[in-house]
Length: 103
Image (cartoon, rainbow, N blue to C red; front, side, top):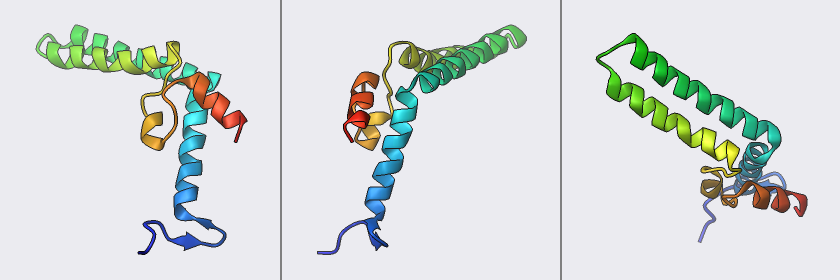
């Protein structure tokens, strides 16, 4: 049975994807990644507040933006990454950093 990922040079393409995913998860667990998530979340919440103030008819859109903005804000504040498990990394930032140190 043929492997799902093809071999290229010395590493398979699966290994390259896994390395990229762990690099992304490690960045998101870093202080810079956490600050970035909080800033982006607050910007989305601010956009929702602006939509609510600027257009009286789009209250639903404004509320959706504000609720969606809560996710990256809370993830940055409470040190978890919702996308990390999709890449095979742990949910918690502390576990991601520990895994990266031991790699």
